[in-house]
Image 1 (spheres, protein in one colour):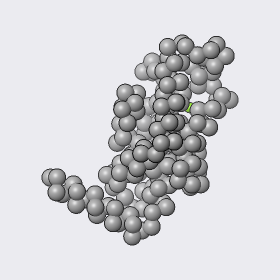
Image 2 (tube, protein in one colour):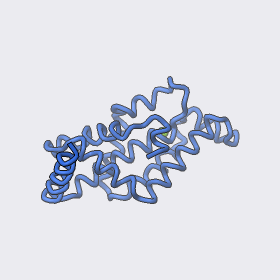
Image 3 (tube, protein in one colour):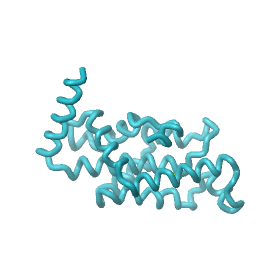
Length: 167
Ligand code: MG
């Protein structure tokens, strides 16, 4: 979470992607419930490893520290490089195959924060980060889809009770 934040990503922005992917199937979905599911995805060790590896490579590319053949491809986010997508699949993988469809879709649509990461105007290299963010959203979406209706309602009621008690 710390490294996502350092690279300019707010969990709310990922939650908006989840809403975009799932709202048509679950009209009762709330942004809080999307955030909760993202947090569950981010607890997984293999997800954390993929995030850190991708961000590290983006940073090394910004600093010009990759070996020359790789530097050019990562810096220019070359379409045929493809390892950024493959790394992100290790995130998508954790909640089964629905994740793959969602990941492909969100990557194609370049919705919300993904559009922002793609226009390279902030001077940063986000070759890996855009796929990582899309993959976290896809994994959280799959988690929501896999929860049965009753379980989703119980989790949402729990979140609401927690928010009410804190207010
Ligand atoms: Mg990419």
